[in-house]
Amino acid sequence: MSTEALAKRLHEARVKREEVEIPTDLWPTNEDMVIGAQEEVLRLGGLTPGGWKAGPPPLGLSAQVGAARLPAEWTKESPAKVVAPNEPFYVEAEFVVRLGRDLPAADAPYDRDAVAAAADAVAPGIELVWRRIADRVAKDTGILHMADSGGHTAFVLGEWRENWQSLDLTKHPVRLLINGKEIKAGHSGLTMDGHPFNVVAGLANREIRLGRSLKAGMWVTTGSCTGLEIVEPGDEVVAEYGELGKVEVTIESESESA
Image (cartoon, rainbow, N blue to C red; front, side, top):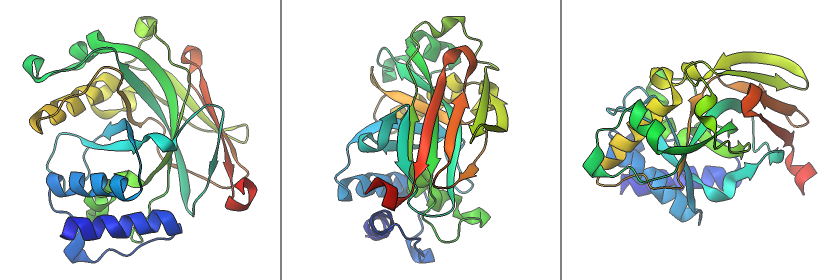
């Protein structure tokens, strides 16, 4: 019951575009509760599971990876426009991996090399985040944020590159620019365990542990390489990934999008 009550509060915060206070007795205490809340929020919103987000697990979550399904309705192709639902609103540059074949339980556990053999494309991306939990900074709220899919609000995908094998994804560069000014520079090695494919492997192994598996065609965004950067309506954001391409998103206010 507490998982359903938590999901209802998180869903209402998304709809009303307001921060929400979560009583401590509703906080998730384990992975099953986190996943249950994530899935119930999707159901309440009538949203279709799309890609995955994955990365380091938050403090308090006993797992090898923190992950969530992303609403397909909230994923856009670059260049895109995204409405800022509230403040503070953030962007982060992330490498995205698409699978060309299933990762079944029979072949687990997976590692970076196994994911490389299964990956059919890599793309640049930008995740947009608004953390709906009122107490955003307390260190023990990480697991609560994960139940809310880490505050996921939208994802902007760049073009898929199928001949990714020529790229060195141990340290492929990315630059984050806001209104033409470089704000942060990073690289693919700043993802969990030093490589985007390690993130996908961690998610694949988690799914198998839960009695599920990643399928061909699924894509995974592998965590921030630039950290969270605040944006406001009117900002134009570009993430440049060198020869992998770039992603562009303009931040709008609700009135501009009406």
